[in-house]
Amino acid sequence: MKDIQSIQEDFVQDFSLLEDWTQRYEYIIDLGKTLPKIDDLYKTDEYRIKGCQSQVWLHHRYENNILYFSADSDAIITKGLIALVIAVFNEQSPEAIAKAEVNFIAKIGLGEHLSPTRANGLNSMIQKIKHIAANHLA
Amino acid sequence: MLKSDVMPSFEIEKIRKDFPILARQVHGKNLVYFDNAASAQKPKIVLDTLQNFYSQDYANVHRGVHYLSQISTDAFEKTRDALQVFIGAKHREEIIFTAGSTASINLVAQCFGEAFIGEGDEILVSGLEHHANLVPWQICAQKRKAVLRIMPMLATGELDMEKLPLLLTEKTKILAITATSNALGTITDLVNIIPLAHQVGAKVLVDGAQSIAHTKTDVQALDADFWVCSSHKLFGPTGVGVLYGKKDLLEAMPVYQSGGDMIKTVRYESSTYNELPHKFEAGTPNIADVIALGSALDYINNLDWHGAMAHEKTLHENLEKGLLGIQGLRIIGTAKHKAPLSSFVVEGVHNYDLGVLLDKMGIAIRTGHHCAEPIMDFFGVAGTARASLAFYNTQAEVDYFLESLKKAINMLR
Image (cartoon, rainbow over all chains, first blue to last red; front, side, top):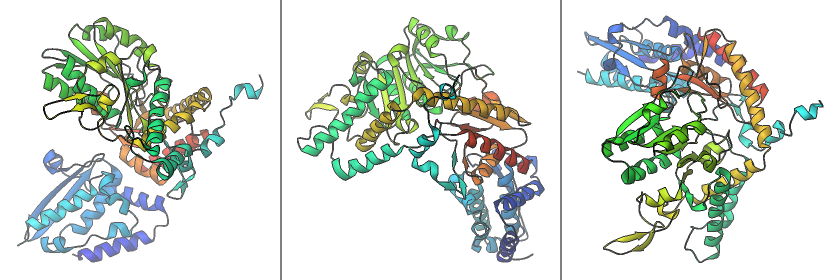
């Protein structure tokens, strides 16, 4: 598994090839469409991260010092952004996640989606992933 | 007919120049501001008034003997006079300044509730209300051990008039009802509803937040007992609200917040309270913004109002026509009489995604539940996208919006 920083750098590289906002969002929307759906079992309030307008569900599994994440949203753009975040953190150790600096979203020109006022649950999801990792630190 | 007879004196390009923000760009595109139901933009005269007042005339109001305090007070009270005329109140002291429509409704729910609502009494709220005209009444009902009843609506988003007589009883103390729904655009039939409420002895509070920028208001003709609106939806500054109440009712109600300005005499044992309107205006008011609201009223009074309303009505008709032509799009709220706003959902597309993509194209609309969750539940949707117009919008903007909306839907499907 690549380390978190390299995965982020890959995304920055990928996005640098996209010329304008339309292409960036088309890419995000495609990612959203391909994100494996979360098991309906986990689409409950217990796994819900409440954004005001789009909802996000996050499930995790911990095995052999590795964290596995799956997530879903009712909005496709949020889903695409989630797919990026999941790709960065999935199958990493709690230590690696806890100390990782999430910097790629702003670098690919989507920083506005991290604002808590965007109410899409993305920021809360990253905080939640960090929190889960912190709870599993040895 | 000559062309000049068809086109009234309303000159849209000239009007747009009065609103500096309309010239700006967003994400490299010309701003298309279709979020007027959330808040309206401000004409330059309002901005100039704020700047001049703080630069030249600022001082605290009331009781000051010095020069600046006197001109501040005069300007502040002049807005009250202008509002009295603007909404057709009988007495100037029936106009109370608050922080906004929400604050005005809370004042009435608390003080009218304390004076007039008791155990077992009923509060009737229309099913079209913004949370601001619902939650204060829920709290009032809990506190007073009263019963909260809801006047249902029909699938069109119009209130069910047949149910109204059944819901109004001699126990009904107040009916809280909007003039125009913020979520659907429905214009309610106040002319027929208010007399029915009065027949059983109920008072009526009208939420005019959404109607004030689109309809001439006459509280006496309507015979509303309370009527509220916000300055910021009327092209004035934020942070100022209006509460109109009939004088005898306001006088019979206990004070709300207490402190400076609202007292007559203060002793350690007890205090006596000031006359209306100051009785309900404790503390230093929002002086500059009230004065600037006066400028917004001047602006509107000098506008070709009929031309402006005809213009936004035409735009709205064209907007709805365009929306109906989009496959899979459903307009939520199809009342016969609507304010110039359209709430809609698109099959298979989340309103949040629409909002994000339209923003990228320079278009400001609102998405979500519009602080009216029971209405969203009624229509079985989590939220809608809402485009709301003002007289400074243009046909070119409507065309660009429709074209952009189609583009966004294609990207998302």
